[in-house]
Length: 219
Ligand code: DC
Image 1: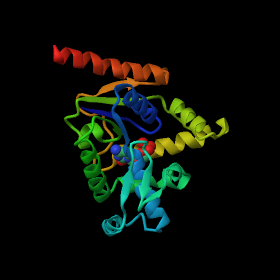
Image 2: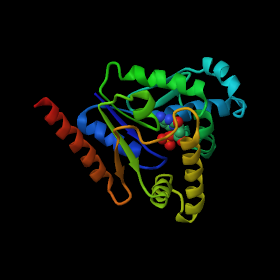
Image 3: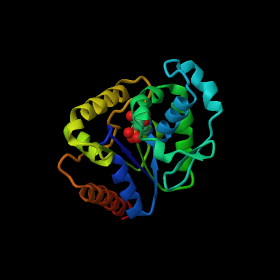
Image 4: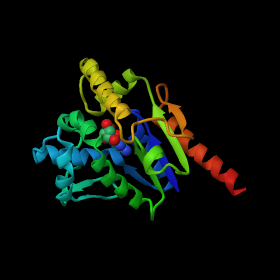
């Protein structure tokens, strides 16, 4: 069973996907972390991010592993706690727009679902990675609410709200306008606006939809 959850930055995908997976006893896969890990690696190796043609060669030197706690390892080193730093935030959309990066990571993501029931979240799960996913959801929320949530998550002051809005808008724009697998609502996706919802409510809504439909198809 494959549950795809897509949506823009800070729309609540990660926490929702994690809790839905927990309730269903499925594996939660956060694909954004994979793109972040590649970005971190390129930054640390001082790869010129404006020259996507050299990415292929650089990717050959990179081994990404992760476990089902969503800890990510680059060449066997745990980098999980470095993935949310500003330098990664500011460059991940550029790196993830490059086809060879996407091809590598999509292959990895498809592989995981061969032997597992998964709740996979990202930007292109319902469109490219698993266009035939059993369930597709698209989470969204007002930009100000998303920025506030991200500030709280990063333990930053409310005074930083405008720069957070700008950062999220910039990233969303790049993710929506890129040539390969842009962020769009997948065919058949159920849109959930979480602006006025609590996490527990959005989790319950998704789990109920899955259980109801499952019951219906099993009858
Ligand atoms: O979900 P996140 O904010 O951690 O994702 C970081 C970036 O990775 C996002 O701005 C675009 C990219 N991404 C992507 O292109 N495709 C995915 N399936 C997941 C993330």
